[in-house]
Length: 245
Image 1 (tube, rainbow, N blue to C red):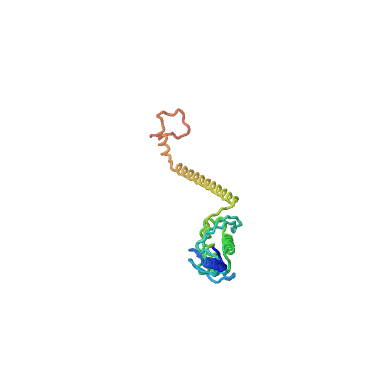
Image 2: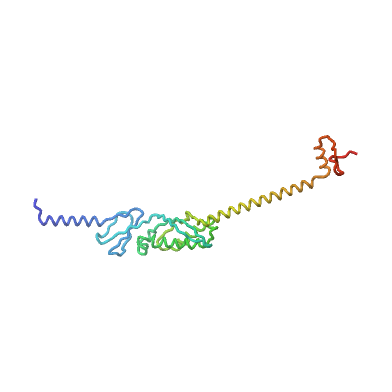
């Protein structure tokens, strides 16, 4: 079969049309938004589903609006200059209505350009207001303050803060040893205090007992212990039993 120039042109045109059609449609998955760029300029935000673009001219950048889990680990200083290693868990998402603002300001890497630096600053600033010995007792309070200050700092940037918690912490080996030594010393002091109190109570009980032993009681006790034999020797004027007149 002979192929002439007309057939070649038709084949080329059909191929070009298929390529154009193929590049004219795109899909945005659930939980995403599409940033449409035309010659590098943001022109639209595409919703979920099938969308149309100008082939070879429009470029689409996909951005997730799902919840993101970010874990940050850092070493910070308390108000008494003690080192604390903390782990913070942040759950956040992008505001679907501000995806264009987020992209124009931070591109697709908002986590490294805004979230991590800002969160690190707030963690350091808040924890620096507390002494290390108050950290465990007030950990929930500290988490809440970090959450509030971080959320206030990023407000209007297109980030929605869902939750922020200190999930783990660790003190330095030196501080842990100091705490252990302190507990041992406190336990020793408490044991000594209990021993002293016991000795005082025993001495007081003995004093009361001695004061309550009258002469008659002593003689009765002596009689109860007498074996019926008269003593061969007497020392002193008092007999160890009651004298009957």
